[in-house]
Image (cartoon, rainbow, N blue to C red; front, side):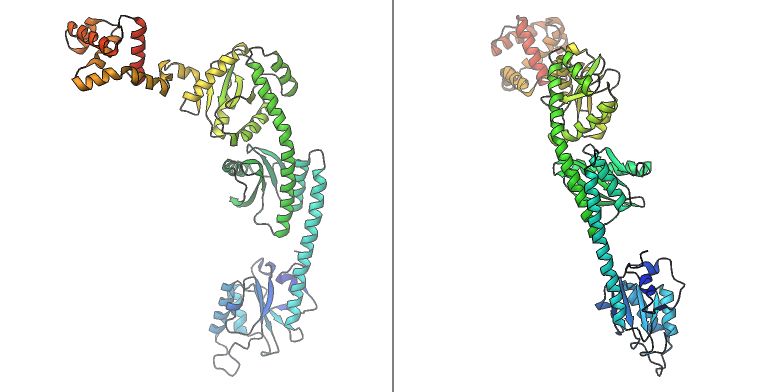
Amino acid sequence: MDADAPTLRALLARRDLKLSLAADDLDAGALDRAIRWVHSSDLADPTPFLSEGLVLLTTGTQFPSGDDPDADAPEPYRAYVQRLAARGVVGLGFGTEVARAGIPPALVDACRNARMPLFEVPYRTPFIAVARANAEAIAAEAYARRSWALAAQRAIALAALRPDGLGATVAELAKQLDTWVGMYDAAGELAREHPVGGLGAETAAALQREVTGVLHRGARAGSSLHIGETPFSLQTLGRGGHLRGVIAIAAGDLDQEGRVVVTAVIAMAGLALEQQQGLGRARSALRAGLVQSLLTGDPALARRTSRELWGPLPSAPVVVGVTDAAAARVDGIAELLELWADEKRGALFFGRGEDGLVLVVPAGDRSCVDELVDRFDVRVGLSEPSGYDGFAAALGQARVARDRGVRPVTEFGEVARSGVLSALTDEARSLARAELAPLFDHDAAQGTRLVETLQVWLDEDCSHEASAQSLGVHRHTVRTRLALIERVLGRDLSSFATRAELWAALRALDPSA
């Protein structure tokens, strides 16, 4: 501990004050608590006028005098010290030779029981000298902290000018605060840290979950939390709704100077990330152009460009995916995919499409897609395996799977097995209701069974005999009803086109039929 720091230990170390402890059997750290101020009072209960973190000086006139029969009773001293301890007083100084020749033994016992430091202030040391000494220590500490903040900001500014400005800035901040500092990107991935590997695996995983939650909320904020016994401060980077990352510091509440230094780092990091955003937009536009190139069925340009910038395209056959990512999350998803594309060269290509991010992965390895869905609240549709000459058709399959799927990842094969009619839109169902409305109205008004008869007849391959058995009527009744259906609808049931259209209309209204 710095000798100039405003603590009771530093105060007692001032030789000019000649202060001395009344008892040295104190808890570890009792003398190292910060002293916010030194105050004097001889009130029996000064606590209404005190704040915590004070050292109180007294001459003891509030206690029973030597002529009082209760002068040696321990209870007044015990109650007095307990009131001070409850108020947060960190030490008690007793001025001797003013009202008392020495410190009352009962007061020594009361302070020892309450674990409160008690020290003697000799007659030749005025109380004002003790208060002034502490004030000087407070002023010296404040000056030292301001000087440190200025020096730290200069060091961080110089670090920002190095080739890896962000990494150097994080390292310098960690050195200045003497703790671990990490910078997470918009996808919640740890991009830089100092010291490297400074967190245990469990703590690092828990912190990443917290950072991901902050980024998902999308609002600029600062927050504090504990993971186990380790306190952390989180500060977002970027604008609300377009966060560029998070700086995490393994420290609790910082003082004003510490916050100033962190604010400077956040400003510089935010500026650097915003400057990088322009490069990111250019890279995104290039990827989008390569997706359009692949849609032509000729992958030559895309292959050559990708190989020079990001590595080879995934080997055919490939699976094409498309996301439904909301605009607010596309930046974070793209940043994570950019990281994966660099790490897994040849195993992932992506780019913006017209209605989501387009993903291209080897047919036998869709781990990137599964991990993406786990990390972000998105749905992904996947095509069947295809070569690059069928890229446009594969992308169409992926869109159908995404739009019709109900699970996070839907394969086109699952959708295809449900049949063409399952893809009918609300518009198709509206047309079907209009087409069959005359039959429904006739059945409702006349009590007939025309809709049921038409559906059974079509399901029985237009067989009068089979329909009659299914309906439990005579085959002539079936013929009569079909003739009535033709008159009500004004349609010729002998036409295959008419029968197919009516069958589709019935299925559109009742897909399970």
